[in-house]
Length: 378
Image (cartoon, rainbow, N blue to C red; front, side):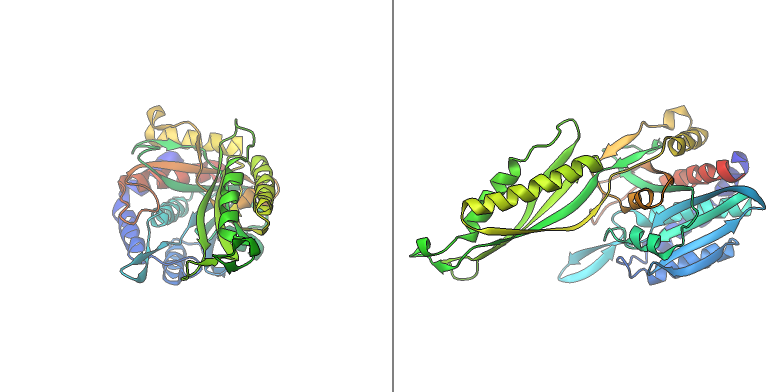
C-alpha cells in the first residue's frame, strides 16, 4: 500500500505546500486557534472524515473507520504559535513549526482517506491546541475523544544542529521539563539598620548557590537553572522583604525529574533559611519525558526507509526540549507512541522569530506518517 500513498502525495504536492503557506499566514496563540481549527476541520471533512470541533477547547478530531476489525490508530499535530514582543505589540509567529506539523498530518490523513488505505480498524486525526502552554494534550485527554486509542504518532521538525534535510529519526525522546517558582520571604528594614531585617535579595543569592549544589544521577542528562529573579524597589536603601525566582528544570527520565524536583525544593527552602528567610515553592507547569514504544518505533523505522532509504534513517535522538504529547502515553494505559523528528535544515533554531526551514521536509514527514498509519490499517 505504500506506493499509492506516496504517489498520491507526490501528485498533490502543490496542495500540500499551499496548505503550509496558508497555515503559516494565520498563526494563533494556544487555546485561541480558531481560524486554524476551522481551516483544518473543513479540510478533513473534504477528505471524507467525520469531524468534531471544540475538542478540549479548540481541538479538532477527524475519524475514518475501516470496514474490518483492526487497531485504533491516531496521528497528532499541534496547532498553536508562539507569541513575541515586537515593537511593544504581541505578535503570534509559527517559530516552532507547528504549521509544518499540521500540514504533515493533514496531508497524511488525505492520502490515507483518498487511497482507501484505512481498511481495518479506525483512524483518528487529532489537531491539538496549546502545546506551548503544556496543557493542550491534557485537555484532549479529558475530552474523552481518544477512548480506545491503541497507537498514536506525532511529528516535529528539528534544527540543523540535530538533523539535516533528508534525515528522520523514528524516536524523538523529549526530556521531562517544567518550571519551579519560589517566593523568598524576608523582613524589610532600612539600609542603615540591616540587623533589624532579613534581606530577601541575599537569601535569593544563597538559594542560587544551593540550587547549583543539587546533584542527581549524572548518567541521566538533567539541568536546573535560575532563569528569573525579581527583588527590590525604586529606593535602594531599603532591605527588601520579598524575592521572586523561577527555575527551568529538565531531566531525561521521569524518575530523575521526580528526584530533582524534591531535592530542588529542599535546597531552596534550606538556602533561604540560612539567611533567616522562608521560601514557598510551586511547580508551575511541565511535561513528562518520552515513553515511546519499541513496536511504534519499528513502524516508524520501516516507513522512513521506504521514503528516504537506509541513508535517511537517523538513530533515536534524545533532546532536552519538552513536548506535551508524552502526556498521552502517561494517561492512556497501553498506548503505543512515538514522535518522529524531521530533518529540515532548520535555522537558526526553534523558538527564534526568523526561523526558516526547507519545505521539502514537510513532504517527507507527510509520507512517513501516512505509511506508519497505513501499515496498521491496510
